[in-house]
Image (cartoon, rainbow, N blue to C red):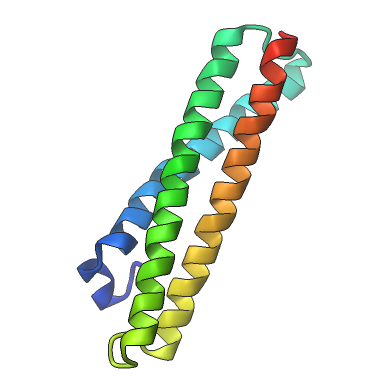
Length: 122
């Protein structure tokens, strides 16, 4: 999607790439932290750590939702306007990127809710 020449003329797509550029390192950091806790065999018992995870997941999930909605609406606008704005191959790519952004939002919000559920047990 980023390799398309017309990609940079639409703010929604640039916003999606920026947000996903934040979501991917956050997710990789959570994978490393979770793997560490699994190998050490202890759970994080400090509420501050869980609150940081909840806040990060919540902020990034809202940003992902905003990026997914803006990308989906821009893609539908381009698709309905005229075929010259969005050829079939590009529209398919944009629709796929919007669907993956919605999936990212759903998983990030699930992580946030799970950590919120875990917080009172500490």
